[in-house]
Image (tube, rainbow, N blue to C red):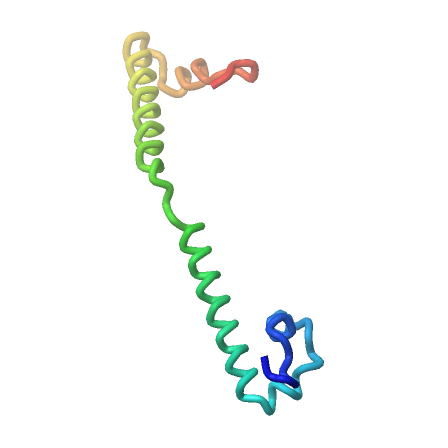
Length: 105
């Protein structure tokens, strides 16, 4: 660090808007302005990596979705069978087969 230049900490705080006292220095110092540019680029890369990780589809998601679909299809098939066997409208079967508040899934 050269004498007279703000520290890296102060430059990073300036990026966050918490260090307005070094505005004049940055307007005339190419060295510090380029350091600000590097900090900004580094921050963008970190944010991009964090977003990519956050938005990544969990590996187990397709399997979980398939289990849910299979369960619902099975339930629908069961409801249709009951409806056909007893001549009860499918909506009535759904109401009768819905879990009550005390039941656990």
